[in-house]
Picture 1 (cartoon, one colour):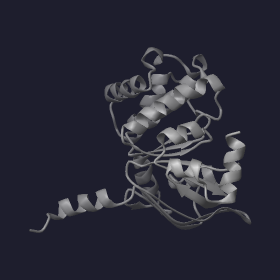
Picture 2 (picture 1 turned 135 degrees about the horizontal axis):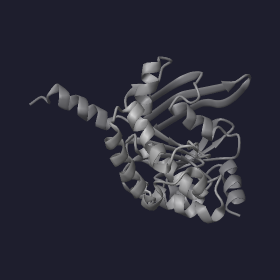
Picture 3 (picture 1 turned 30 degrees about the vertical axis):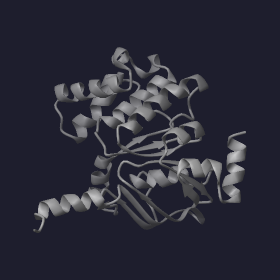
Length: 258
């Protein structure tokens, strides 16, 4: 018996990767920030991307939601191919949430208002609907007692958790993190990583650029090492840390784990 066309489409979407990068290239003048990167991310997979400064990690995830425009290759997110057409950019941004190194909160808005803004503007939610959604996700990142505070009254760790809640308010299927703890004081890092670990356990697809190798060991299904705009090595967390194949990854781990 043949499946109904709608069921076939749903089955095809379920089988398709969450993210497919093929021959991805990004140029800044004559500098190749990304040099033919191939990466397939399965739905629900947690991937940590690491590598030395300038290796192309942040550029890679910024290209996925068109914060940087790629110069060659393909980017396909949940079956949508990213083109120069503004419509596909918006479609992909509906699928993908982004958390930045610097929190980028609006200083004149409270934590609650920061989280309400995008659902009202981009999803057409009413103010009461947006407030209910924002409260839900601010509670999820353990900030229920701070929703009426302005960013200047919050610690760095709390601000980053507001930024995570803000991304979640768009209810994306994929979350991208660009060094989310690197701007934090050391004692605030764990509170943000703890929230990220809870999110990872919820089944969302995650790509995270980070130097937090303990987090990578605990959470990542796969670790990816980049250098000079290329993926040098990738593998499951245990193999990646305990039996790295390339000299470049061995050197990087020796330096960062020292």
